[in-house]
Picture (cartoon, rainbow, N blue to C red):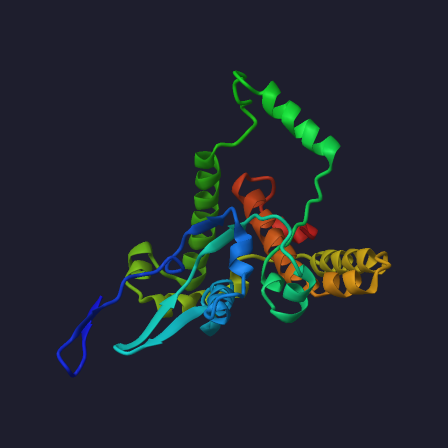
Length: 253
């Protein structure tokens, strides 16, 4: 996109890495948490906005420049790996970054490293088993699920594919929100299963003796709740897709 200001100067807007819908992999993610640079607060802010719910106001990244403000929605998914960063407790409790991700800390000992090395060496010149999905299989599965949900949404909204594609993005979002509860039905055991999951979360928390670690772990519960809900919905869609049963959410999935 190109714009001009009152002095006749032209500014070209180039979409950045957080623009659009894609998956970003950071294999040295600790650099994202390095606050030695002056722009650290902006960097964390943009990452937090990128991880906000898609379609929400906070999911729109805004940068104010001399030539005007740049606004871009971000639908990226982030996959980050790193060695445990220093002062991780401080990052979790004070800077609000980790609460927006699913954090898994894996302490790898010598025996596990040896086992991993043995698996890798044992796999040399050995064909990949058929049960291991390729990236293409995974992408096809996700797109199939997307098509299933889209089909249900269009049916609930009374729209054809052509009518849907003719809508602006903002209108599509409004239609999707309006028919949120028309896409799937839930059964009587659905909420009971969710509440049982919450009990399991806090049972784990209560088993942590260290006060600091327990407080840190509790700060992740809101994100775990949200992910658990999404996984359940995905499970329903998956079982609907493979025709295990016609109303997948009715048995409490």
